[in-house]
Length: 94
Image (cartoon, rainbow, N blue to C red; front, side, top):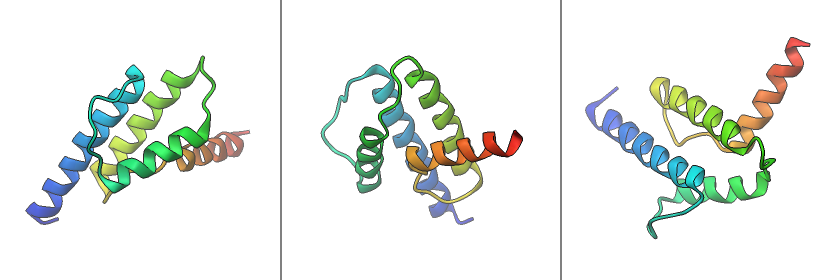
């Protein structure tokens, strides 16, 4: 991995953490977004998480994206893809 790729991944990870923090708090404190952040926000709105499990699911999603960006390229996976993969893993264990 080149230094430039590493820096890009770190920037993505920092921006993702900021985005998730804003979602967990329920308020956006900025008006400038990267295209991949907009895609994640649209996907998040479409997922309609159950309110009582929303925070827990978002924290699990955050950990999954952090693992993804630690080992491979971005942009971060969408929440909908995370939920599908999570359900597939659960079904495989049964």
